[in-house]
Length: 467
Picture: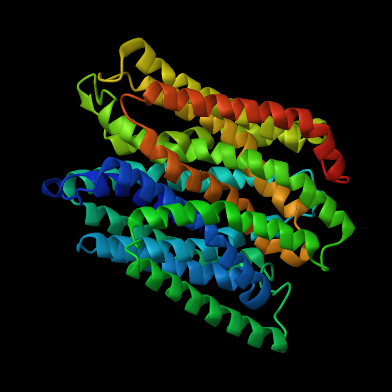
């Protein structure tokens, strides 16, 4: 199911930035590259912010399994909307459907995987690495198919292939879930009581009215602009996880043991924010680098720039089994979670420092070897394998019982916060700033890794028995 969801998501993601900034004569929308980069980061941020909705709906109303199915249906509707031409309107509407559907689906499918194992099982990290590999098979294949079809034939035909992929995933899931999963994920872990339902309905209504009122004020004061929206998403990308941590720490439903583990989780979350800020630029800044700065003609063969979006999942498919086997073999002797995160931050920082070399050696106005991009994706993917599956596993172990699915959504907010930051910084990238851009961000990641390494003994003690 997740394989096909990733097929649809990464197929669309490999295509949409080119769709936004290619000229109308090329089938695109003709937006500026800086605006397209910010919109991509905001879109990615909202995909993960919406996981809060999916986590809450699963924990309080529908359960993991039912929420997941609704999410898949809405994602499919989003891709179908994108497959129809019509300018910016269908683009934003389709993105909105994919944002909402992904929010309902993503945290819940990971929780179902976590429910297959006991919290103390040493197989959990290995299992999530294998799950992560399967996810990335879909991410690997989709840009190779969807990208060339969209760029060379028709963008909307490419988006329609993404819709077909999501439909296949949903069909397979419906026909196999009962046999393979039994009752896992069907129960509602913290259902709303009758009084709570009325209170929540009022809060949702008041929140909607307040949001519409703010939109009206922005419109009347001429502040209802794309940049205002980008700034707003960047702000809430940081504000929402902060509020969530405060709520979980102060909740009466959180035990002292669970509260200690939340304190241990926070510095890991900050490290993950930095990592995802770099990793997610692979589909934004590196997509532009592939299109504008990379020699795409090799040995008489033309490489489609969207194909570089398959390099990251290719490395994951190749190396995730090795990481899973390594954690399995090491067992209780494997590095602690904070040490794994430290390695991930070091590798992410090195990936950006590597990208300073093309500009330093050859200037920023010439086409360079595609091996630079391959090197970036290799380093950042190795970092991803130290952070992403490990973070998923740590989240399912460290989550307070009353906030199980919602805590998985909080893990997704690390990515949302990173991409919210990207919405502000990616417009700073350009030929004249390329070396400085990669260099400063790479150094910041390494410095954060050093800080996390120094804090790791204290973090491990606060994890209270979880390694």
